Image (cartoon, rainbow, N blue to C red; front, side, top):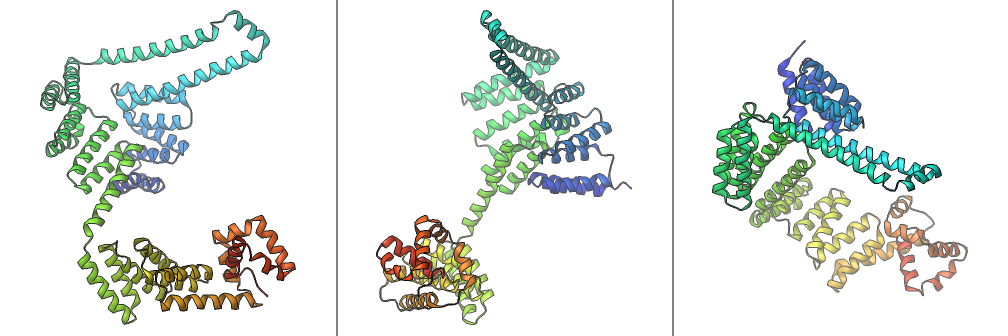
Length: 508
């Protein structure tokens, strides 16, 4: 049973997924849309495009064929078919598909551009074929002899191919010129004059030429595109937006290819970006991707989204409000309400992301919630912002101790003592580590969890993979008393200390 409303809803969801690069998701939406309206040729076209974006060209080809069977005179169906065949390296078939589409829409830019691209590849393949023949000739004494007698053979062969390609392009351009109407010819003259004036930064004069082009041939979208470019240079963004929207809102009244419409949406996005209306700019880029999914537009969209997020973060900064949230967090912490304390510290950090103490406070809350890795990330950030912040070094040492990274805990406490030699917490933490390492190294019991964790540490892995240390460990296993000799070498001593602290090396 046909349900056009549901099909349209699913199609819109598919388009949004496609714009976001979620092509698998887009495929599912378009498939479901087809179930609700199996006679809609556009749905098969969209599904073909999604499959092509996934590199699934066989499925893309089948859906393009279905699209054409439903609407034989629709140019985009042939674009989809040619694209799929191109992806399958069926270049001859792709060329035929584009030529077939041009019968219905001779001025379709996408078809003409795609045809040119596939013919360039065919030409390249022909050149590769010539090179292969030349290789065969070089390896065949008889043929090589003939080539040497006819020194210009290879050059003539290549020259002939280039001349054929040049002639093909000339005929193609000539055919286009023949098909132009007087209005199109006159409009193009004004456009070219406008382009020259634009390059000379004579913007008012350029606008007049583009307006003349529009008067003569008001259905050519590119005149408006160029006119918008002039307004952008003049920083008349409202006029540029008005020019773009005039075409886009009435796009079916114009001779507009998908690629041209995409370009106009991109120009609109630039206008909105310049006036900092990022939501509308993002929407314009997304609509552009529906028309023509290019890497340049995807990159522009991602860059704009990053810019928007960055500016929103910066606009949100307010040290006074950050202090208010920190104080609320401290109250929750005192009352042992650690989840709410963390939430307040989260908000405080958003309001003032450069305050090291906020990260330290959140680390304390995360420690109480037994989220040690996240707490460690926060103290590392606090130290990065304020390297002399002793409290952060203490918390770092405490976390490493809780995570059984005793050697790293020692390093953290030691750093704190360098900054504040009389700090009681650092001294006690350091002594606690030394005692724990000594106790562990003399124990017969092996802490499997700690050893396994230590072995995933890059520093420990580097030591254990060092041939010199492998030899030392073998000798120590046979003769433990040799450790007194090895610790005389500072490099070896440092490595042994790490292995002992990691619970890997036992001292008896």
